[in-house]
Length: 112
Image (tube, rainbow, N blue to C red; front, side, top):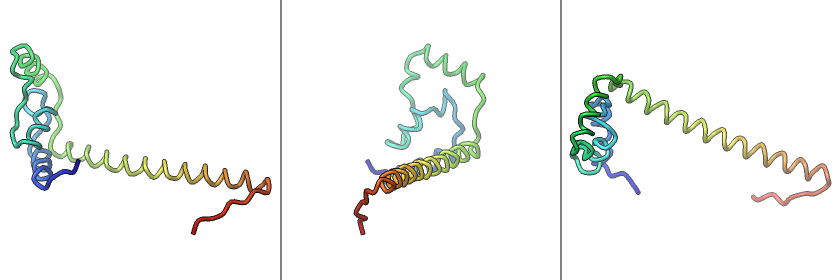
């Protein structure tokens, strides 16, 4: 599934404008805003869920816009580093595999 230009703009707008809040800006608010342009959560239709979210809102620490962006960047960097590490491990395993068989006189045809 590809992200449309409008969805990308909404993601950037939400990330820069909203502090995370379980009562006002939670993950369901985010998803509905990105997909439909509506910043709402159906979880607040029931009074006890709304009450619980409001209590947590006053007790929980919130992330600033800057922290939202920093966390996003950290995750992107971590994903790239983990992918590079995975590729390096595969290359090392392949190299050891070739060395093992080469030491026993077996040669593999190289793809060009």
